[in-house]
Length: 267
Image (tube, rainbow, N blue to C red):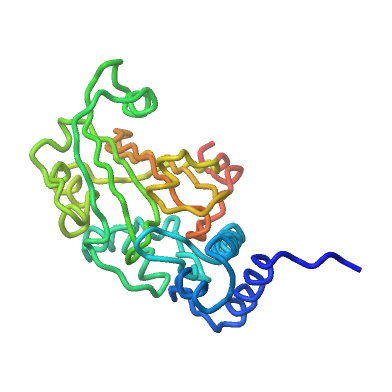
């Protein structure tokens, strides 16, 4: 005869079934721990262990001030090429994070992006991307993006001072840097973006990142490195993003290259 499961496991399994059956919807808060204790479901420790088990399984998030909340079932679509369409930011005033929300059918507020702007000595990777000497200074525009009350990712863009001095990019006010965001600011300053390179790395978050993004125990992050160029090859932005891995579905749609055909045309 199999040993009887501990009470916290029974409680966690019951809530797990209810969540998966839709009895609790994404974003809905589970009963507070004290309510379950008063209802005779177990001690404070028993209920807390049950909720921590649900969190480890990726079903809920536990945050101070918000309680235990059922996680969204569908991640945000993180568009690839389409999120940088010039028609969006140049003509329509739609910055990249908003393009992701629109594609996902999710609500958004421009103030869900907050930022700080500082002038700093360029870290080694930033200096290398911009082709700057050691000790050169850059502007670092660090953003935290939320969906409602839940953080989704951070993004820090690094710019050469001569490209952005006196522009809205160095304004730390919440929200994008005006209509079209930073890409539109660069465009108006004479630096029209032409192409970019993105590199992705999956890794364990730092303790600071786990706290900032309100990550569940064991959840990884996806680190993004984005290098943005003008047509003549000038780097106008190098950005580092840290994304909660479970909150995004990455999507890329592109024309398949045929280098053999291109080489033939050039002969």
